Image (cartoon, rainbow over all chains, first blue to last red; front, side):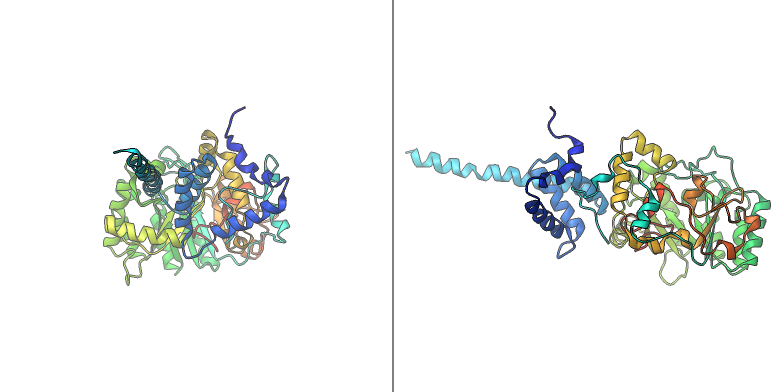
Length: 109
Length: 334
């Protein structure tokens, strides 16, 4: 069995099979998040694209790559979004170095 | 404008099933009929100096099918006999037809607005360098493809070196007044996706094009039209080669927008091919899907009374014109 089949992207509604009420609530919320608001569709697509990389979801990366293109973004902009996600991930690891400092300091003379 | 969710779709029943455009219309209580014919769109032939990867005409420098002078004269006679507001000239590169300038001059003499779908680079071909002045002198409205404001994307679709030549051509058009505020000379550009995805909102990408083309290259223009790639001919071959056909068709069908139907170009134009045969649009022309069989089939028999309010011949490719914001030769329709 292979994990992460491309075709599974279109099978997502099957998640609603056992608790359709919860899935419908999720879908309504998800839809509402996509709509134009204080942020443009393009900005939202780039945020979704960056988060998709941060959470390393291949379905989301695929879907939001399309969304970014269809919102008029180009690879230069999308690559900057990937770097933003990666830089924050890297920074999040680095800042935890202070936890190590604190831990070491606590037991050190 | 309804937008399909980027991740999830709600029309799984379409997977693997035949997709019927007429049934889709009927499900929304719609039918596709022409209204008043305002535009005669004339395809002067398949000869072109470029061979773009998405071309629905399959045009290239090796194509020889072009409209004869005799057929051009018939077109001019029809333009003179009936009331059209616009002549929309396309190809191939229509300028490469020896009768192109004659058609433009005679149509302008009839006070008909003339649009030329001009690929920009043809003005660097032998005998074509005066095209900007010719367009200006006859107040032709110029519509030119520039799929993106960056070189990599444009050359990927239209061929190596096309972007830089296109920018040079746009400078020449700007120099004679095209796309310049107050000149009255209209230069509209066409964006179409460089790949198997839908165009962005027209207003959004137009502002990007205006800002970037001016800042990067000092180029100005009037409007940007977004046009969806049609799943026919060369673009369909690309979809098949790249394994994107089913996914792209699903995308078009799921993005069906019933509000786009009223503004479709087939409702107000008749398309003429290089032999004089009539069609509902240039895409049907390339599929050889002629106008309804009970109607006049040739420019020789043109009859606006019969052709107005005609039923439009449709196919799966029509989903390309009804997806999202809709698509026509004049860009988005909603």
